[in-house]
Image (cartoon, rainbow, N blue to C red; front, top):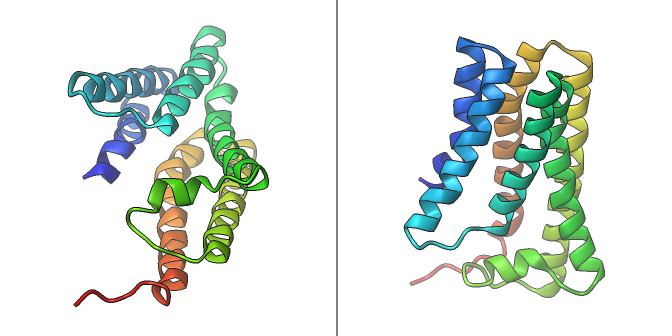
Length: 176
């Protein structure tokens, strides 16, 4: 369910783009992200730092898209977000803080070197995703980019998560 909640703005962006245009879709994505934050706040739930970052980036890049009527800015938004995630993961690791371990230690017990490999692989994946977004955004139509944003990025994420699960499987103990 959280997965669908996280995809809420992207799905609404996709639908709005298919029905109208990039500018209406951008406004819908901004509003949907505000709704996510508001919903969590009203329910007294913790608002994840990544959601705050996403809100800030969509407001800045989406706002620039709307104010300047230039779709380039909204096309850069996923890359900025992916690269921010990569920098946080890599920077944290270099500073002696493993943010993935801090986030997931309740769910998984892993050796330090595995946490490190996991973190670096996610950082590399986010760097790749940012580059892939730019390649599609700069070399293909807006319609192709919007399709990639939903289906291509989600498909790549799904494949990466499966690969990570296969890597982690040997470290997960069976509960009896």
